[in-house]
Image (cartoon, rainbow, N blue to C red; front, top):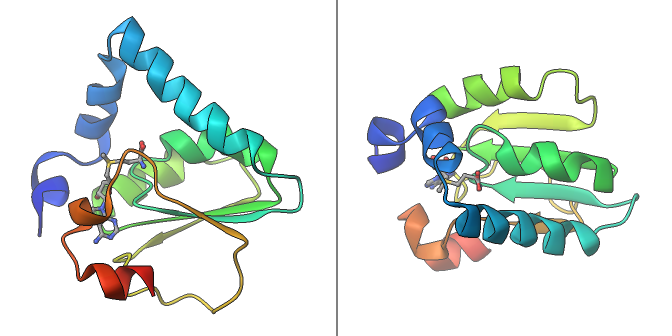
Length: 128
Ligand SMILES: C[S@@+](CC[C@H](N)C(=O)[O-])C[C@H]1O[C@@H](n2cnc3c(N)ncnc32)[C@H](O)[C@@H]1O
């Protein structure tokens, strides 16, 4: 268990984004818009550390398929509900450094509102 699973998962994480100031909200919006503008309708996208699906919901229209993984089971359960009705979305409760997904099935990997150090795993393993 880690910080996100224990203290900042699912509805708590959602609450943090919901109280963002207008300036921060603008930044968060621009960040997703920037990524979305670089995708195309054929892109198969993987988001590492997707939380409750905030980013996936906004990017799902800009790509062919989008898969989210997160180590917090609570966040993944909330994401399943938050993203129900989005047919091109797949979700897996999984550590980003131990992906049990086939090689070569994504065109783009995104990691938003996150940092390699925030995953608290071996960064070389994570990147590989
Ligand atoms: C700040 S939240 C960002 C969530 C989402 N990307 C967003 O922008 O709304 C960071 C997320 O990374 C996840 N996370 C942390 N370490 C992880 C790991 N080793 N593998 C997968 N997910 C991880 C946390 O559970 C948390 O949901």
